[in-house]
Image (cartoon, rainbow, N blue to C red; front, side, top):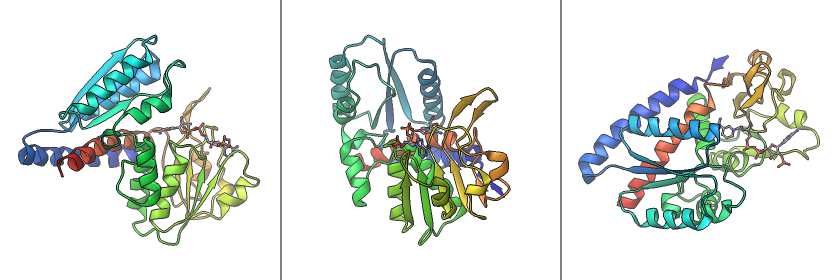
Length: 281
Ligand code: NAP
């Protein structure tokens, strides 16, 4: 079984990006800039933002975090996004989710210029991805995709099953694999026989949020299994896949932690650089 070492693959990607930033700086006399807006003081969001900032600095991007208190007015946030949209030194804007209830998430997402939308959540990017055009792609599925391609460069004709249909994970992941000529099934909480669907799959991407849902007898021998889940349990953090037993049947599997998580952050940096490059065309 191949343990897909997301930490290592992410470190390699960050090194590639670092070198690319050096080249971009020489060519354009400026470097890509990422601005993160963080609202409130929820611990997980604080941790994610700190990790993103550290990684951005590591690859040589200009990075900035704008912090607002939980009670900030929606208009203040939207005005700031509009200001960042106009700032030529900012290549990417990310508003850390979740947002306080009084702020309309969709309004925030749609205010970010599609060309600066490093999360790939703007409807224009979603549409472009599903139409097969150039777009920002949500960071987590992009990271999963890059790991799958490392294991199996030619995905044409493979059967892929997404567990979960969120806009963040399942749907964009399905689009990426469809573009690679996979035959894709998207499953969700109303799917009748999830085990039977999984048993058909050459590739399983589990993004559900149910600890160790995917068991060994759900997995075809030699399948590639990507575990997006992050679930806090009495036994610590576990994924959506029963790692120990599935590792005995799968061809390749991501661990939790150390699989998808590090790739998500590296792909945010990649998206920022891609936005910069598109803006220079
Ligand atoms: P989400 O928005 O809650 O979506 C969960 C999906 O799973 C929904 O489509 C839901 O179906 C489906 N589902 C629920 N129960 C199911 C069942 N019994 N069988 C089949 N499908 C079922 O979650 P998300 O934001 O995509 O996140 C999923 C997991 O990934 C979470 O554990 C989250 O913490 C983790 N995550 C990790 C990263 C990372 O960087 N590693 C990034 C993002 C998220 P319905 O649509 O029918 O409700």
